[in-house]
Length: 48
Image (tube, rainbow, N blue to C red):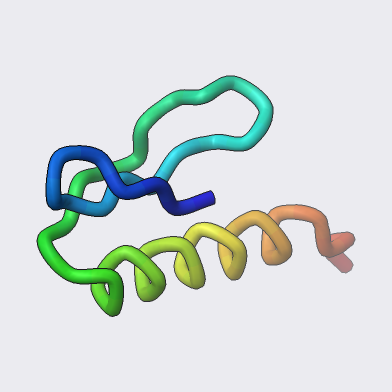
């Protein structure tokens, strides 16, 4: 989830509230959130 705090955008975990970075633009924060989702789904794939 992305939350605006003091003029900056913070990427936070929805479950724990842990911060995954602070960004000056919404575009950069969305890009980081997309990266996190991609890696989360890559880890859930079964290895052959």
